[in-house]
Image 1 (cartoon, rainbow, N blue to C red):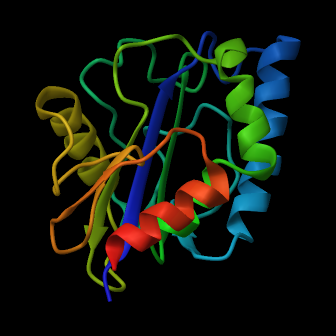
Image 2: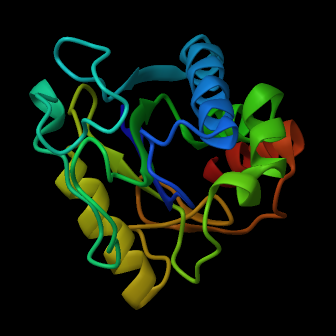
Length: 194
């Protein structure tokens, strides 16, 4: 049974190591969101460093185990050290599109989305990309980056798509779904997969 891979990427207004209250707030929110999403039905796994924890900005040199070497899109132009890294990226596996959409557009993550421009730079680049993987296959950071770049350059396709314009594992378009619809949107997408 195919599983959904989801990669998200955003450029922060300040480095993760910045001691400013707004950066600390983003980090605290992020930890709470990760805990909640990790408990969400349909969530299978997400990329974590082999030892867990570590410095906030330690992404590029960390051991990510089966998730591969940490990578970022070509348009990321900020720092890559513990003190200068100014990005947030996630990589996860889900049982399907509906559960991922429901998790992203509900609960704490939905509240965080409403505050995203407090923490993230506005950009014309896509902030997430989805694709299907075989059961038990662990997507890599490089997979996510190459698909996000493909989405940016070529638009949605079965190889790289968004929640808004998605495809079934067989490559059939599910049509365009309304943005930020939470459970109603997840139900619409699941109906489109049948």
